[in-house]
Image (cartoon, rainbow, N blue to C red):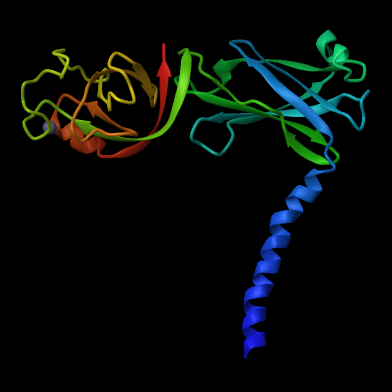
Length: 236
Ligand SMILES: [Zn+2]
């Protein structure tokens, strides 16, 4: 009886340990390093180098995601083979390990925020290059606040005290006014949510932490919006 119990407990634990350790042991053979340096309006730049093959250019895959969506919009293969004196100076073989991909953002969905990650592709496996970039064609992204709960309100007495004004005395406007926890987001901050730029100009007793309340003109519109999980960015 006792032996059976031991088997029932020990066998799964041993299996789990094996599964947990195996990815690390296989990764240990990967000697590649690299960095995603910059993402701009026309290019994606970085470098990748395999210390086991110091003179060889390696392949890099550029993954472009729409933030919040685990499915990439596109995967772009490039070769890290451009000469860079800084890489040569750092002792990386012949220094021909940079990449610079000319990107046309217009070919991707607009009014969104892209997340860019890069991987070196070697015989030992795919290794994620250091650094992740966020990019938007329309906005300057100051920072990502991550996932927030978004609710909706209107000027009616069910949603507010019915003064029709925000706590700052401003006249609220749809697609513009948003209520925040001012201990986390200062009034006046511009927030990008689902392609719309809001200004934090209101607060409410129920809006605490990772929660924003979006202003709508009518109660029906607020009801229709309901409650969503959204990605929030501070923009300029
Ligand atoms: Zn209302």
